[in-house]
Length: 126
Image (cartoon, rainbow, N blue to C red):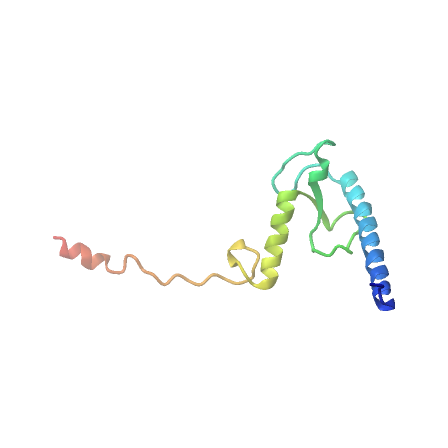
């Protein structure tokens, strides 16, 4: 089935966006690998040329278009720490998983008083 003119144009737009994303990633990845040591900023795992493909460049503000030349928005993370960072961010945005420590909500104060009857309990034991 032939594609409609609108479908062809959409395919061209998507293909161009994908090409640009690959180009952009190559630019900042190469720069980050020159600027920073080949070590995961979270877990400290070290990388060599053999396993360098497992080291990713993470955008601290999660904006892949924010690529300052000094690398101030980047940090090198291993695949596992990078996935974890994005999982935390995704759940924070959705308002889930407050125990990840990335929310601004203050914990509820404790209401349980385990020793409130202690004096009475000690007196009845005599």
